[in-house]
Length: 298
Length: 326
Image 1: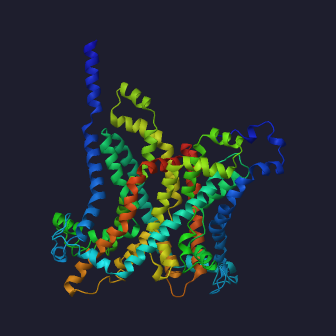
Image 2 (image 1 turned 30 degrees about the vertical axis):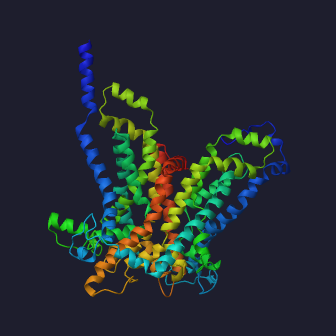
Image 3 (image 1 turned 180 degrees about the vertical axis):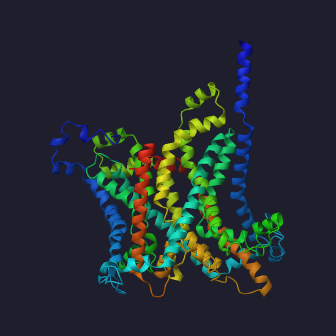
């Protein structure tokens, strides 16, 4: 009897330990991790390497002949800081306006007993599957006289339906007892939203705030069609460097030019991505939860 | 009815008059007022702005044009712009390219995050699991511009790391991958995989973590191997999530990553990289003499097909698996 159990256990252990599956898991996940890390390492290495080392193909994942020349060139380039400033402006105020509008919309929509709530929800959901295309949107912004102003970056993107649904689902999950007690104590619904609901919604606000900030930070197509070149954010600057429309530096011999601009391009990539990537570890503990709440129920 | 114990369930619900109701709940409507007006202005007005597809656009005029479109050659009057693009081979090339890239991308990048999530769940070392997850999200946070810039550096024929590596491994020589039409789709799909796999896997991972451990326990006692547990428990249990994601993906078949394609487009890969959205862009905002009505007509055509696709995927899924999004 005990012998049989022991042999069964052993069999089970063998079945639990599946070498093919384990190897496959190991290979796929290792490749994924390397694929995510190596491109960034390479760009960092390029941005700190000397032009000669780059042209001689000596740079791979570690800086060769360490130099900060590329970063210095950016420092001397006036448009970069202006563009950087605009990126911060669009991201900060865009996110602020967006959170304000979405909270005001999501709180009433989280009350599914409220009259008219279902119709409003249907309006939100339908607009996720059908929308005015590029042209009607452009002509609307144009007829509101927003083209060529910074408002064209801040206003049209305030409500994103996916983020809205994350907030709605989060508010729905809050305990109603506290709100009911507050109503009995004579607090208005505005008061409840500001003094009770929002302080409890840190995780959801962080999640949605991060998604929104990432959107504004990375947006380049809207600036391309709506803004004057003097208002471009840093992503448009990078796009123009990639397309070869901006020569960021014009000094240096012909031979050095392309390799020097490669290291400058790398430095621009690093500087333009760093702030938003740095936000992410602080908010990471929240956003996985937020993402799943929104996605599963949405 | 998780919202609250108020109205409806209350015995007085039907007797509450409109005035009484508004007196009690007006604040909710006051909150909604600004965002709702905003929402209608920026989401629904452009939807009706699609009417421009049937109207003649007057430069510097309003967004709805100044008169109904006249006939073009064969079709009746307001369909002028539809006839203009539907009879053009250039449009159908763009249409075909869009479909091919989308379908190929769906075939590769729809299952991959599911596999990734399942494998990640197989990791018993929690710290390692957390590390892999954290690293895999990072690409989601960088801009498409950055993704394409990094790719162009990695693949640069003169000094790119990947270009050098491929040359050394397979002796293929230095190839200008970003410019060669035959690599365009591959690069599109690989960058999508790079950017979104970890992120999309979050949803599946959440669904997998939600599976009751009793089920796995029972399967283990019955002697199911880990591979059998994946096939007979994990995948069937997360099927609803998979179907919902599938429906959403199918709905977006014709609107693939326009911004990325625009960044990757060069004069040499045009034959495979011209998609519907870049075609619209080229004739409207990217042109010195924009044809807005034509652009609106193509946009509307695209939108309606998207709506039909998502409804049919939803219908089929409800019929076949019982899962649907509405």
